[in-house]
Image 1 (tube, rainbow, N blue to C red):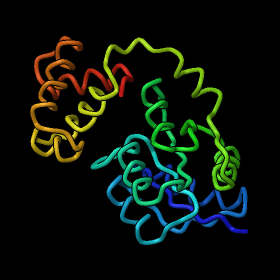
Image 2 (cartoon, rainbow, N blue to C red):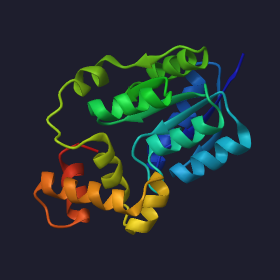
Image 3 (cartoon, rainbow, N blue to C red):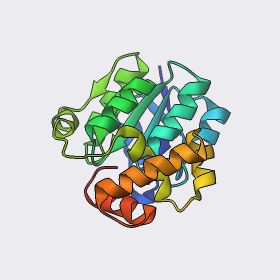
Image 4 (tube, rainbow, N blue to C red):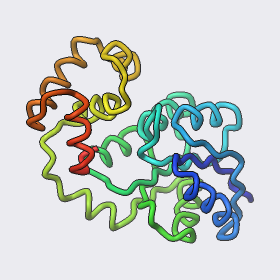
Length: 201
């Protein structure tokens, strides 16, 4: 039985390569591609594929927030996350949301295809390298502070950030203030940049 897949990654070259290679590695049909989290959610709503393969870092909505919106609509949906770095908080957040798979973006297409098949069948697949990397955590930020900084890095106002994260503006300001202190920076944009440079987001 063919597994239908939505493939979302803002790096066009990687996305195109996977769209070409995955069908060669298994009975997989890439029915949609998306370059942003917003496009991924819209494509999912339209097509309802068997598996949503989402890059963790995307513009507009990152992979976690896109996964959250998808899983709100379709609890139990098979979601596989691709990432370069997996902090413990990110991995825990993804698994708590219901994401079934976590893989490095540098994984072989055959491994990603195997993971797609595993999560499509209801199983879980967390790459050993991602698990090992996620055990090493020197990040002082809480999960919510990371969420706020991810959105802050996209240039949104506090009001817009509050809407995106479903938080009160005052709560967003509190998280931003705490994150700025912990990163020893002066602005939320500096804090977001610092956190990304240290692989905390």
